[in-house]
Image 1: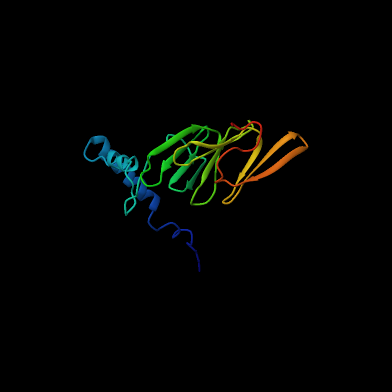
Image 2: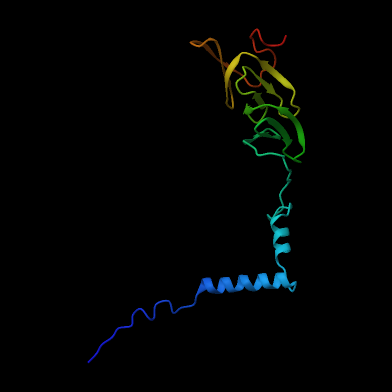
Length: 184
């Protein structure tokens, strides 16, 4: 008596999903090439559309012209920090309120009266701006570092490498910064 097993024969006898997918792709390409049916323009139009795809519709949508490093709300404005510039947009409409050349930005203060600190990398100093108008509320030309919080703005100024002063400021307080480099 001879006994033979055929366990390897039944292996792979199911449907070939990859084969069906390849066959469908070849059929679509043939139909597109012959001009019978071409789904690719409609697919590309759907991918490249500029309207929002969300439901319900978004409040506003604006192109900002670059890749943002950070986006922060400051009262009724949206502060967009990019590589070499900072801009403010209206939270209600998305329209640009102001733009300024700066390498960094940070928001200080609370909801009632926020400010935007902006400056240049590797340069001393910073400006505190009104988030709605972009007007300078305070300038400091001596600070080498700035940290912003809801109720305080901290900055450090150094007379020498081992002689630094850490100062806390009320972000809402107008006027001079109290250093020789400040405007009168």
